[in-house]
Length: 300
Image 1 (spheres, helix red, strand yellow):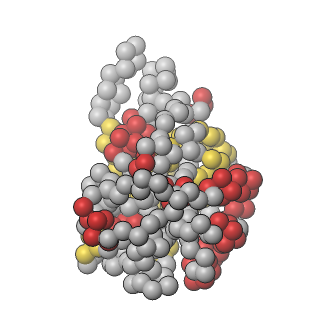
Image 2 (spheres, one colour):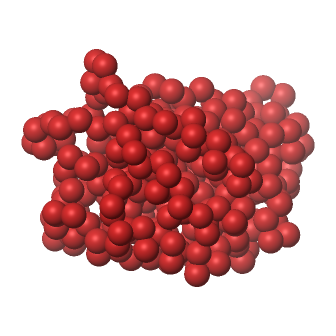
Image 3 (cartoon, rainbow, N blue to C red):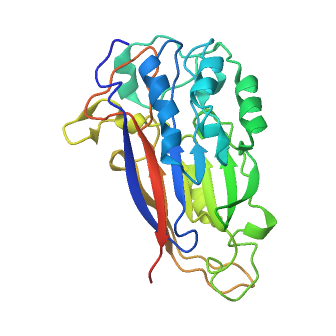
C-alpha cells in the first residue's frame, strides 16, 4: 500500500494500576480500517494471538472497504478464540469517501449526506458468534482469568449513536450503590468502552463509576510532529491525550442520601490505531499499534 509508516506495526505494553484485576493482560485493538489485499496488516493481525491475552477489547473502525468483512474476520480469526468485547465505529457502518486531506485539520470529521453503508451486521454477528460481547449501548459481565469484570459500552459518540445504558447490577454505578463504603472498593472491575473519546461520553462513563476507559478513533493524530505530538484528534479530546494512557477527572459530588463521593481520576487509554482511512494512507511519527494493558495492583 502506498503511504508512509503504515506498515511499521508495533505492540506497546502499558502498565495500569487498578483496584482489581491485577495480573490481567488486556489486548486493546482499534481502527484496523481494513482494505482487501493488505497482506502485511493481515499477517500482523494474525500474529497478535501469540501474545496470549486474557481479554481482547476492540474499539471499532474495523473496515475501510465494502469488501473487507471476510478478510478482516479471517485476519482476526485467532484472536476471536480469546474472550473479548467490542463496539462499532463510523467506518464499520459507512465507507469512507475521498476528501481533501487538509479538511482533517479544520475540526472533527462529519458523515457525508448519503454515506455508503457497509455490512456491519455480518461483522458484528461473527464477533458475537465467536463469543465476543457486543457493547454497542449495552452492558456485559465476564469472568476472565478468575477476575470479575463489568462493562458498559457506547456506540460511536462521534456520529451520535451513543445511548448510555448504565452498568450491570453487580457493577452498579457510584450513584446506584447505597453502601457507606467507597463504592470502588467492592464488586467487579468496571471498564467503559467507546470508539470515539468525545468528552461528553468520557464524562458519562467516568462519572457513573468506570475505573478504566478504552477508546480509539484519533489514530494518535496520524500525521504528527517529531516525538509523536498530535496536531489533531478528530474530536474534542485535547491533543496531548491523542494516544496512550492519560486520565479523566471526576469532580467530588454529593449524592442525596449517600456519603460525599471524593474527586477521583479514571485512567483513559486511547489507541493510536492499526490502520488509516483508505483515502489517506499515511502515518508520520505515529506508528500503527496494538496495546497490551497490564493491570497491576493499585497501591494507596
